[in-house]
Every structure is written in structure tokens, then in C-alpha cells.
Length: 207
Image (cartoon, rainbow, N blue to C red; front, side, top):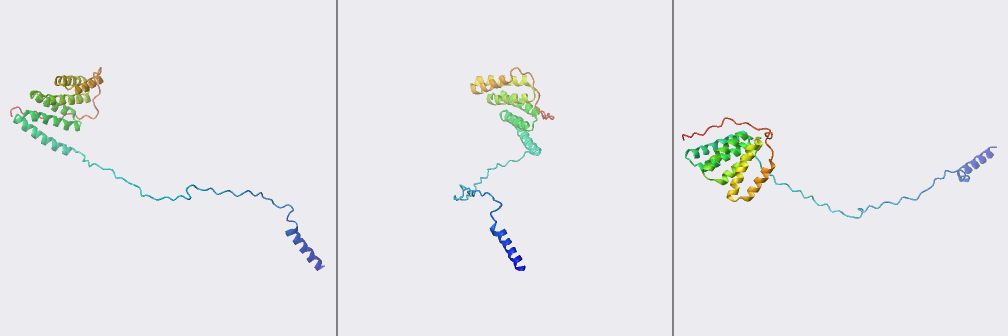
């Protein structure tokens, strides 16, 4: 009996593992292997080149403060008074216009306007038409910023008359363009941020 059981168990084990493997197996469909993608950069050799960095040229710039303006103003005032005292009116006329430019940079247009008017008075006396012409153009620009359109137009008309009399036809055409741009305009709002004039020291005519 023992031998019979042993033979039976051996027979069952062989049939389960080897004899009946084709009955009901899990059959998985095998797909072909995916071809490997060949990179176009695989065989290329790249040479590392150092990047070229250019440093832009920087221009040194010193911010202007009010203390620097006061020093320049005092120095120019001293020169202007010296020229007026000794009646060097031609040089004094340019001193006045230089002072006007300084006040324009400070947005003090009413003071700049006053100094340009003084400069024009002297340049007319010296028959310096070129300086008078430049002053009139600058005055018209300042008056436009102050909202004085009609006065600016008068300065431009006077400047155009000087240009025509001197044969400065290109300058005359430029003035015509400016006159056309303000044609029909009677008044505009003043430029924002204007600083009103402080007490301007009158010229001592006795000197």
C-alpha cells in the first residue's frame, strides 16, 4: 500500500509539472522589440568655446545739487556785474544768457525769462543780431512752457524777421514750422513743476 501511494504521488507530480503544461497556460502575446532611437547628436563632438563678454563703456556722470548751482550762480553773477560796471556790454549780454540757461536747468523759468530779456536789450544795443536771434528762439520756448503763447509768437515773428534780413533761410523755415504748430492756439496750460522767481537783484545803474 505504501509503495502504491508513493508511485501515485510521483505520477501526479510529474503530470502537474511536465505532462500537462500545454493545457490552459497563460499565453502572452510577444511584440517585437522597439528599435532604439538614434540621436543626431550622438556621434557629433562639440567643442566648448568660451563666451565672449563685452563690457559697455560707462560715462561718469555727477549729479548736480543745489549747492553746486549756487556756486556757479555766484561766480557768473560776479563776472556779469564786473562787465556791467566797466560797460563791457557785449560780454555782459552773454553772461545774462548763460545765467538764463542755468535757471532753465533749475526749472525757474520766470527768472530765466528776465535774464534773457536783459541779454536781448544789450545784444540789440551792440547790434549782435545772431545773439538776439538765439535769445528770441529761447525766449519763445520758455514762454510756451509758461503758457504765454501770444508772447512766444511775437518772439518767433521777430526772430524770423532777423533771419530773413540776414539771409538765414534755413532758420527762417524752421521758425515757420514752429509758427504753424501754434497757429490758432491762444493759450495753453503752463508746464507743471515750475518754480517761481525769487527776488531778482536789480542792476546798479550808478556803477
